[in-house]
Length: 115
Length: 115
Image 1 (cartoon, each protein chain N blue to C red):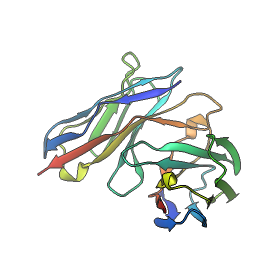
Image 2 (image 1 turned 45 degrees about the vertical axis):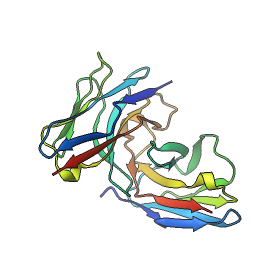
Image 3 (image 1 turned 45 degrees about the horizontal axis):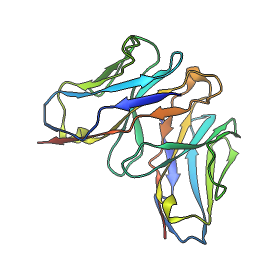
Image 4 (image 1 turned 90 degrees about the horizontal axis):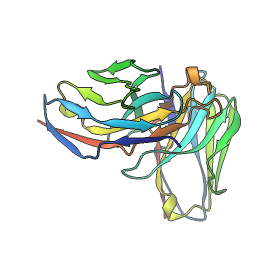
């Protein structure tokens, strides 16, 4: 079955540091890939997405590129802020027609940014 | 506007109580989802409604009963819950269950405590 593996956290950075959170996946066909962010006490917010190989998703300074050859979708940001402290989930959506958009999530990575 | 509204935000109930969670969206989305999220874990899919019909039930115990009265509203009826059912319950919606249009937007969740 489909699976998503994220780098283990927690990740602790100083403000303005470079961020990378690794995400790799296993799936048949051509899944769509997503990054969601969950701030403390809140639901999930869609951060960015990519629907085919070599697509780059970007939002709020975050970027991720769909790499089919390495089955990866790593999240990057050049300069993190304290307000980026949250839990980040990588997810894939099965390409199968009967899955009704079922998402498979990674375990989540806790990011803490200090001033 | 990509707002999914969940009520109540917090709910405390005893094991003999009957309660309901409510989820509402006015974006014209035709797929709606219930997820359960335990602390420090990713969301787990419970139910999927597609065009107001139950399409996926992920082997959820019958003490959880979903209902989709119309295309904007999704309920989760709770009865005879166990303490281990305490969790954050998230609702999500998507424009369509069809792969090409399926992007899920989440509500803020209902934090449920079962005593």
